[in-house]
Length: 264
Image (cartoon, rainbow, N blue to C red):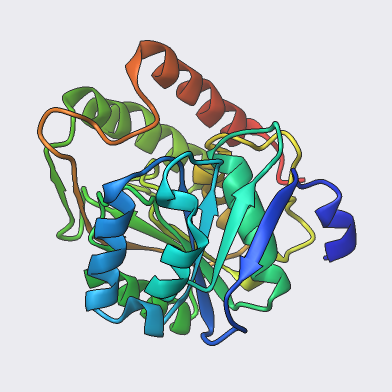
């Protein structure tokens, strides 16, 4: 992978690094105006020493709150803060920027999860690291099998995952993913550096990274596993950027495009 050439294809951002690489694996957290939710999540992670086992990159989409406050993130123990300053907005853009910096700095694997305090990161991230050490290349969190648990999952979201996303991704990938829309997942450096797949497509700016890598992993010979986790939605408000029929329809289109795209 030619990092100089790849950088030209990534939307502009600023990057503040608070310290040199300390751990074998990185965690990339996309955020956008998460407010107290990201602070609560970081508090729980700090209470379980997550910052000691993975270097944490906060990838901000241009928040107007303290989600992009460098001093706050530094005090928690984050490795770096990446802020998207381009006109190309989206979850995928933030991940792309974080993936690039983490790969450039030499991490052996990258874990990613949302910054809205839905997942029990503090109790399960160590399981992801164990799976990396066992030689797995793709690790997907699941709340629907293996003892995982979904709490207050909106019915429309549950039905869409169970009867649309999971069957589609599983059929196209050759691996039975039970919770592919779950943003808590991880990829090995070996897979992300494979020249047979293009991780940094310019058109990937939304939720493509949730599906595209899952579909091609087995076809390219990589080891896949799932880890049971808990994903809890608060009663009432759904802490998600995907809301309403229009947003869900657009997401379905992104899933279909990701499923049928060639790896490169």
